[in-house]
Length: 298
Image (cartoon, rainbow, N blue to C red; front, side, top):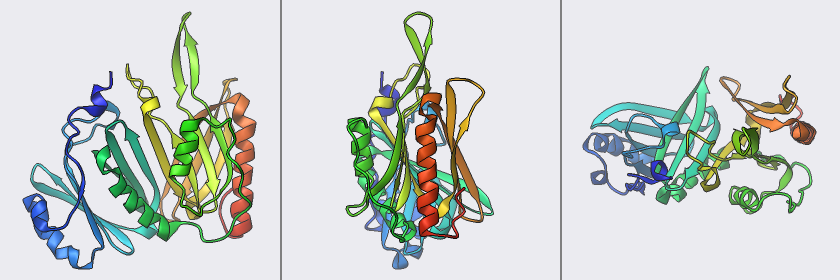
């Protein structure tokens, strides 16, 4: 059942120590930059990706500097693109995991929104988490927000653990809202997923968006997956609930901006949970505005 998420993902990402570890066309590029770099990671090409994550097969060299990322993409021994991404241009970062397949997606832009998605074997997950932690240390909120709350037993163990996993040791949760998986009955016994579970949480450092892999075709990989999006508080433009004409469905919509480029996403929630998420959105607005009077959250 889970072959598409596990097959042919046996090439592990690694930290680059010397140019000889890289494909030939990346070596000169690496050597020209490494004297100012603090850490470099290479994610070899993966032969097979789950259908929802299909993209051209390529290797990715990620070079981490004090104020920017430099990424070089090697496809079939051709250096097809290099990307210089200042941390100031980053809008959000998504980290996903489905069994042995993982990815990091960086959304960024200057005037227009761009994104790059780097697939890698889950064995190398901690390497990419180090990249995220470095970005977070540059973009996390520095202003003190409100008092923390306790996570309740109503929050499923999986999402409670996932939330704690993405917090720094001294980071505190201020508010959160959770929507279980939404399913709609079909025929007598069958049902179809309308929306994957969603947890949104505000901490004194960030806004987290946690969900699962949606059901695709005959795959049911959600319970084996975790998708986390790091949203710097400085990038928040708005978060709000939109009540739809359909009686049982609403949506929570998140808009982010770095004042130059913008990005948005949304997720369905049940109308029964709309008031819970509306309270969360008001808490986000209040806390962010209280800490930063010039914030643009509305």
